[in-house]
Image (cartoon, rainbow, N blue to C red; front, side):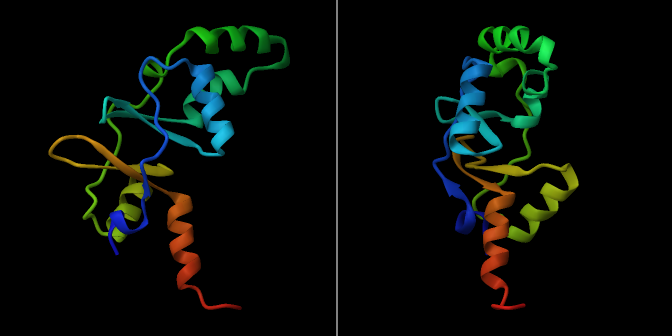
Length: 138
């Protein structure tokens, strides 16, 4: 089984200039934890809900400041600019090994020649595959 067989194709993305508040809104609206960051179609980074912890984990007294900061800060200031990524032909076993090694919950799938984002494999995609392989009642 290959990354292309289980990836979520054409995932919702962010740009470097998107505000943190807009990106947080997307994460919550779509109930996802990761957004690939693109420039055109080229993968330039990835952002996760953990990267925004200073905004989402604000103490009650600091919430107003956190909201104001989220409106003016951009994704480009917080994204991981060197995300672990795989080719569509990467074996799923290798994808799992990379995710465990780098302790990440999602790996973008990109055309490694052009850098174009093709999809994303998240821990949810891997759990779906596992669920399909388990026998009922096992």
